[in-house]
Length: 324
Ligand code: NCD
Image (cartoon, rainbow, N blue to C red):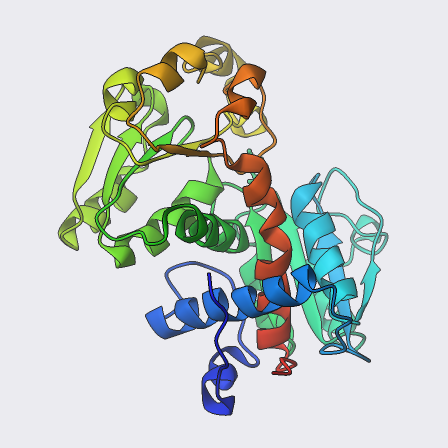
């Protein structure tokens, strides 16, 4: 991706905005995020010291376990010369205050006065929206239950653009837990804008929710649903693998039945279309064999690293801090 200089007016497109869902972003905002991320990626490669967020503070509120998302958001703030404050991670949506009975609304209202932006992850589908309604500063949804994960989907798009040059005309297969996986719920709403075909590969119980598939089809997107991974990879340009979301299953026996539905191994890679790239938001359980890591199209670690420039772009744009 080549970075280009952006004018002041374009840079204002996301100033003061929340990033809650993929659908809520316009095509122009999506393009702006890609261009700004390319600008920051260049700066990182050149090891330039940045001061775009000098004097700004971001609250990093993760009420659910996270490694990549949390660390790449926090690395992004540091790379931009800003500061991060946080509350200790707890297994529930509990800060020391909510444990004392304070509502999320009240907690957020207080934090609003301390910071310039808030990054929030919760197991509750409504938490990011509730936080955004309570505060004036921009809120970035870093994963809301089984709902969405827009910053992940943005780095996924950025990765496909980098690996393939363009997305138009590609066949993108999404594999695994399409029901509970929040990354794919956001990703399809970005992919559809680039004119690609979608193949949803999942056991019937874990297929993409009907309301999403119906909406995509109504918008004229070519969507195929199948359980046949081998047939899908023989035609796909991109294979996006997801983890079966154990923690989201109300019925643990159901999880046991589907947990090993698909494994991307050397045999699957051997039957893949030439040049197919493999993405995964990570963490992986067993769905991609370690031997696949040496395949040139295995892009998942490169993908994880793209999280930093994408999250730098999101934080700097929403807080109106980009210096070009
Ligand atoms: C994903 C998530 O939290 O939804 N992970 C991530 O943010 N990279 C995917 C997952 O947990 O399976």
